[in-house]
Length: 407
Image 1 (cartoon, rainbow, N blue to C red):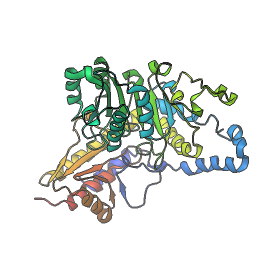
Image 2: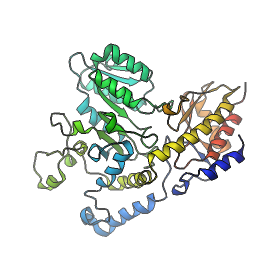
Image 3: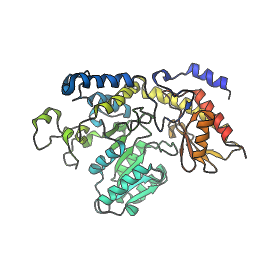
Image 4: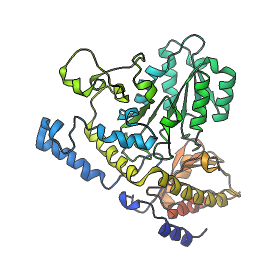
């Protein structure tokens, strides 16, 4: 396909690139690792900072966006993003912290039912988290944590050994391969086997449409610095289904923000948790960290995930066609499933000689294409529908062809 064709497609299908700061001169295809900064982030964050300078402590109630209820400004938008009720979603902490707080409630091994199922290619942080949870409960992580190749193996394991499984915790979109899991199907199967089912949505939130409430997911967590463009280390999100939020029997860690807002300043020694996911909050929200996430969620709310998903499939389909031409005759293979319903916007390419880091370095420094490597042998390209272009995809395929020679 020609450069002219790519530019013609961009004219007809421009996305929302004007809302973002684009690094000059590069084709940025690493939004699955760190999203770009919205243009509105700085002025809106500066407004919050100016309120601090102008008001001091009175900003809790008198700021343009008062700090005391500030996290509530994010709640409904975050809920819509993941297909939740407002009472089921909250923005707080970081991803792995949220997973641990949720596992305090939902990983309750007892008798034979102790095992945790994760995918074999789970992000290392998830692996560390579930292994440490097993140890915390006095269990051997090498036998308690069961690593499986993917959704089909998980379903087969649940059919045969479901009575031993306490928790299924998978990535909604696999960080390495870009495969979109069958979230509702695995959720139903896990719960039918008597297990709790949770999801790490770090690579799914803001990438693919989600219906967590309708799918009956028990709990989920996600980060905000990849597709959600909240900035490096941005605050994360958490979901707990409404059937659990009012369950007072669930164990849960508590702190200053775990109690009903109306009683917070009564300074009583016993918390009165609300019947919402806010009960899983511990500390008061960091306002200036929440601001960029709020700004980005407003963009997603305005554009809509269905429209973004449609453009994502157009961009990814175009890039897939280009890569099909490139991999032919080269030691390359696209490992992301081809079917549209089985992937998000990331396409992962396996490098035959395992030199992923070297390839991404050359793509960046010789061709101005920003992708990312997952050692030893995977290069990830993510045309993000908010700001990526068909010309970015064309540049990426052309650069990969120039970098990896035919054999």
